[in-house]
Structure formats: C-alpha cells, structure tokens
Length: 148
Image (tube, rainbow, N blue to C red):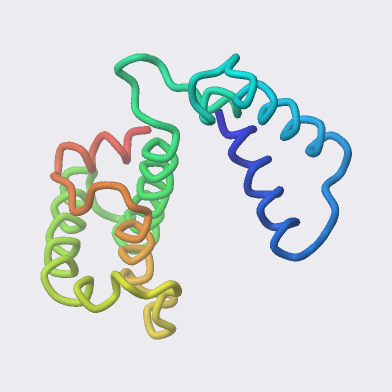
C-alpha cells in the first residue's frame, strides 16, 4: 500500500521543486492517469493503486494510525520505560487528556512543532495528535499499541 503513496509524495516534491520525473515514476503516473481517464477504473484512487479492502480502513487513516502509534510507543519507551504496560497506558492517557484540553487547542493549527516541546513528552504528544488519527485514546488501546 505505501509504495504508491511514497511514489505520489516523490512526484509531488519533484513537481513543486521543478525537477523532472524519472522515467519509472513518469510511466507509472501516466499509466494510472490513462486508466482513470479511459474509465478502466472508477476512481483515481483505484487507478493509482490506493485500494483498501471492503470494510477496511482507508490508506490515509492507516498511515495516520501508524504515525500516531509510533509517537505513542516512543513516548512510552523514552519517558515511561520503567513502568508496567498498564501504568504506561494510564500515565499517557492522563497527559494526553491534559494536552487535549489545554495546549492542543493552540497547537492544532501549527505546521511545525513548537521548539520548546523538543525532547520532552509534549513533542511526542504533538506528533500523535498532529498525525490526524483519533486522539486521545483509552488505556486498553494504548496497551494494545505497546504490545505491537
């Protein structure tokens, strides 16, 4: 799934910077657009290979969840590593709830993390919230994330 997303991101960066596309990317994009324009695919996402199983979650939500989960795992390891999984989940749920009720209201519109968050739990909380995945989440889901 992430191959097409990575390709699209690379294409976007090259287009925005005025760089030419390499032959493989150009061929892939041209073929996908032709499939869509000739109506061989009903949606542009299908043409680009961004399908997800029926009842599954869309690629963009899966990506957001992975980003959030990675930030939460780092938070647990770096700042609560000496606690049990249950205690980690409880502590992170508490600080995430506080962050949601206070600083996130101001941080949500920022494109970049505030510099003073670097190296502390707020930095990883900002990443988790900014991912676009559901936040804050409950203790049980946090324990499941830590077990993965």
